[in-house]
Length: 371
Image (tube, rainbow, N blue to C red; front, side, top):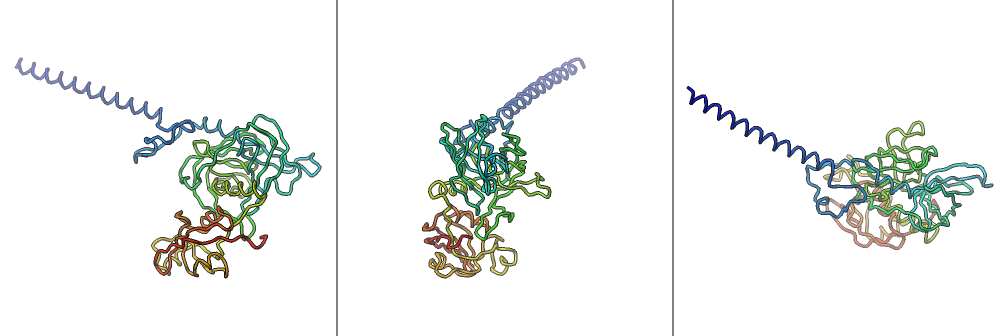
């Protein structure tokens, strides 16, 4: 019995030692995991986003930034406060925000911020105030370009807004209720939104929708990604009261960049048109045309003599892409075309009679009317 007792005791000691080793191993693994979580592989704006570790994006990874300090520090220095005064230049009549896009003083804002005003003043993050010149404005996209006599400014870099993903973290920076340099965070909720806020048959609404808090005074301010790049220009909120109620809308950066080039070079936007009347593909259209997906843009009519007519587009064609970029809705198609100038050519991917066709040389024409 004593030998049996010794054997049992030895077995128990071995089991205890093994359990202790296993516990320490698990504890070390847990500590390593906690350490990795505390120092994620992605580090906001200062991180090298060309790193293979980031581009790999393993399926198990889910990145939530620890804070937005670095990004906010970049962006607040490039977002300005805009005050529009009466024609006499004394009383403020309206205001909003703007984004510096060049070291020598070019600034983006919304057309509705400065429309109908007199003297436009710009206050920088360092509280210096400048009189601004309106270089040009475009009511169809609700954008305007200002210029101040300054140098050595800290502009934002444009992001490729086509690469922005639903669910991606973004910051909205502006001056709501004249509270300067206010930063809010949210995610991209949707893309290609049309909320019917702009007037005129040639208006373009293909907004990036976010749940970052935006209020009156944020108009013309920046929507940026975690690298501090300009994703869009905040322009509108959906609200019953006039204050934020859940969703805000920004003009995508790729469209902004094109309009800014036009305004700087010509003073007006160079608007290109396909020459078609269109509507979104809905469930009924998808069923009638035997489409696999309820997306795309139906051509209702083709304008005689237009670029679309000359390229051979037909009524009932379904446009599904421009230059290889998918266009699932009317706003997305309008945004893609609006990035070009009259005289440019584009390739259209269409579905005709159930077959996919590419029209490779569709020449865009300019507007023949002021509306």
